[in-house]
Amino acid sequence: MLLKELDTPISIINVIDLGIDLEKMKDKLRAGYKEYEPDVYLTQRNKIEILQSHLSQEEIDRVGYDVWMKIYKGEIPDKDFPIIFPHIASDVLKTISSLQPTRMRLISECELTWKENSWEIQRIPCAPFQQTEALIATNDLDYRLIPRKFKELPEYLFDEDLKKILIQVGNKVKEFNNSAKKLSISIHHTLILCIPDQISSNSPEGIHQDGVDYIVSALVIERNNVYGGKSIIYGADAKTPLLNITLQSGQGIFQPDKGTELWHEVTSISLINTDEPGYRSTIGFDILVLD
Image (tube, rainbow, N blue to C red; front, side, top):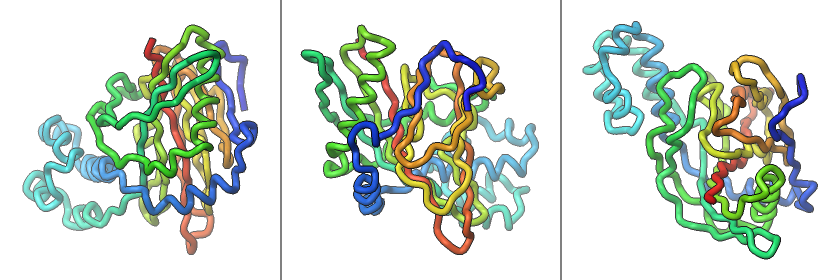
């Protein structure tokens, strides 16, 4: 629900309004889940969080920035942890080694160009993904500043449904920035898996900004046997909720991001029936106005 009138553009978009058959879209993406690959960076981040939870702040500082970055990038293997962290208990190291990926993902990039009162879409090769202007409300170390490389979305999934959504995204930007003529959009297909005894979240950085002009955060494709996953937008203090909603299939949030007083997060998900698999499938869009 909205708690007060907003002076910045935030809106819920729904793919049904675009003439998209949501059930067919679900079926196609569900069949495409086999293409998704584990987000190894998130798994490494989870390892770091477990390690740091068993260290004092003095020990964390003593290890140093470079070591944490090398662990994050996978340059330091698990077998070296007992040497670097001799006081970490063996059961903790065993837990770290047994972690399973909770986020699967694909990435694609495109440019939208405004010509003759409509958007033209051109898919382009993906550069390493780096969020150089991203912010975390707590001012903690933001691993998103590191370049990351993900598997590119197969061409058959860059389909007419996705193009309809991209046109709608471009039109939303036009509503609030009529001078925009060219957009760069990074598209993130993610699948968050519920793994017993592990945290499953699509925003492990907590309350944050993504560092781009506009975002569509978590356009939900499918929720299967899960609860949680609330999308929350906060005001300038990064504490006061302005919007708190559990998005359903076909829904996403369009909002400005960089340079605004808006912060956001998505809460973790958990299984409803612990005897059955659970997951949350989404598409996210990071939008930069190039001109």
